[in-house]
Length: 383
Image 1 (cartoon, helix red, strand yellow):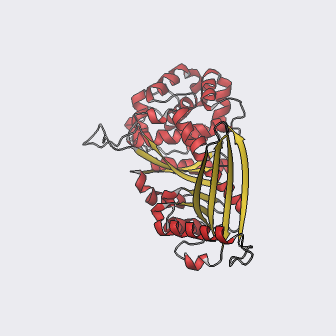
Image 2 (tube, one colour; image 1 turned 90 degrees about the horizontal axis):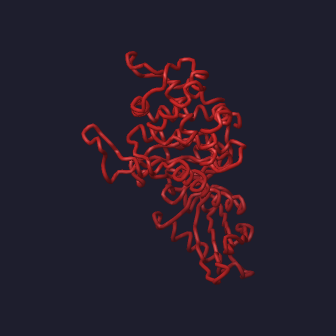
Image 3 (tube, rainbow, N blue to C red; image 1 turned 45 degrees about the horizontal axis):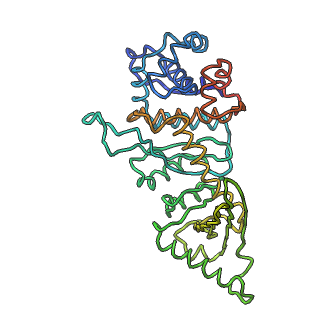
């Protein structure tokens, strides 16, 4: 399904006297420009003017390229919630039902500030924070939602989960999202969870440490009180970047957890992931232990892969948005910032799916130079 089909799904809520340019023209030109490296409304206008004939051939309602102010006004007035719903529908049409690891994580867009009519310059301490659902296997964003601050992720995550089809997925969330209501929401959506436990859930965190300390003590005892069919380990060893890393995922599954921790709906296992890193040149070694709860059973390899895959949202989504799209350097505000963030994610998804070799930044440049490549991207042929 092409980008033009996404544009056609957006309803025009503007009054008639302000419809000099069609929604199709505004959104299509903006998306094409973002794919080709545009990071501001001025750059979108300049790119449009450099490709007038290109857009005239493809947009039946094209009259001329809108000004940068028109792009800004349109995306500032476009409801981000509505734009997000259109995007989710478009994604479901392209990708169908996704079953795999869904990493939920937040990112602060540092250049965006909160503006109001009484305070058009924005609040100096406010930064726009977005929580995204990342389909790790497909390398696409399934959805996003705005929160007013990082602490409000707790209330935003259930809202995002409600909007997604998560049946048969494994949802991974860092410690901020390790909440009873969130675990319940995931189970109600017929999905599984792997939740990182830290000191914000103090009692649970201390309990998990105690469970594994006891397992460590009793594991070598042939009279152990623990049934050895209830725990298992998965271990990997890697050498690279001048260091050696040994990872161990230790899973303990006990049917009694559903009673002991009944407030955590669906809990089946507790997990300790140990990472031992050694710098080969110096021999310096560090040890890190992380704890998780999960609705998965005694499946240490699957759990270990879920934990490690979760961090792909940082490298493959957030890092790309900052480095390849310069998102943190932007100064857009309000709805415009949120809508531009979604366009960046759409562009990133399309560029990642392209079989053409090269970095994301390189592909953006290539799309601006090579009209044939841009046509391929706008047709979204690779989904």
